[in-house]
Every structure is written in C-alpha cells, then in structure tokens.
Image (tube, rainbow, N blue to C red):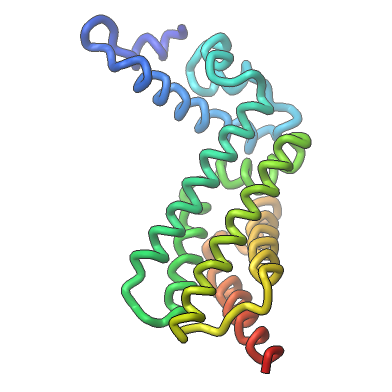
Length: 218
C-alpha cells in the first residue's frame, strides 16, 4: 500500500467496511485510468502508470483488474451505464408533453456528462476502439442498449401522439452512431471547441430524422 493509501484509508475500528474500501479504490482507479488513457492513449498506458496516478500500488491495481484491458472494459461498462441511467432519469422526469422538449433535455444531459468528465469521455469514445475484440464487443453492446432506449422512448411518444414514429430501429442506431462520431471528433480534434456546442446539431439530427420518417410513411 502506498503512502497516499495509508493517508486516505482509516485503520482499526475506524476503518470502513471492506466492500466500501474496495469501492473507493475502484473509483479512484477508474478516475486514474481515464486520466492515463486520455493523456498517453490506450496503447502506451500501463497498469503501473494507472496505479501511480491513483496513488496506489500496482498490487492494488491487480486486486481489481487482471490487466489494462480488463480495466478499460470495466470502466467502459460502469461509465456508459451511468450515462444511460442519467439520460433515462432526464427523460422520465421531463414534465412537459412535448416530445421534442424531452429529446432536447436528454441530449443536454448526455453532452453535459461528457463535458463534466472529459477524460472518461475520451476513454469511452476514442481509446476503447483500440482496446481489442473484448472491448469492441462491449462497445457494440452499449450501442445496442442506447439504440433500444431511443427506439423505446420514441415508440412511447408516438403512441401518445406527441411524436412521429421512427421508420425503423436502424434509424435509432443511426442516431447513436452519428452522435458518437460527432462527440468523438470533438474530443480528437476540438471541433467545436466545447462538446456542448453540439447540442443544436444533435437536436436537428434527431428531430429531423423523425420528421423525415413521417414523410416517408406518408
């Protein structure tokens, strides 16, 4: 255990339960991994660098993860689930009957989360691509979950008569793919300067695709 670990972990009867300590360690390792992956890229990142960034020993890293691939996959699963849950809460809590307002609110939440956690955003949208087949399988899975969420919300709005129905689930997937690529380009190239500046673009994309679907059906 490193010096920083000693400082941050009370001992004896004042020590938190084991599962609490492990959760805290894992959160610190996630934050450290995001910083290291964003700074040097997945290919050049090491378990030792992540542990050092977290102020922990390499042995502690290996108590939580088998290797850096295991770490990035775990971080990806945890963070993307949190992002999707934040979007679900926003959609569910939206008080208006206007489906376009709900769409804009959910988009706003998504981009605000990316802006608040830039290192994690780079890991999830950029570095994960180079992390191997297991990571890509996880990326495909989360794409499917986001697609299913968009399609389900649109179905509910369409049944209430507050929004046109997307023409197919592929339309929902196209939205996910386009938004991810827009955010990824912003992270890699800084265009636009702030990821939140994409909000009107994404809104036009989603709402425009919905209107186009209606026209095609008509």
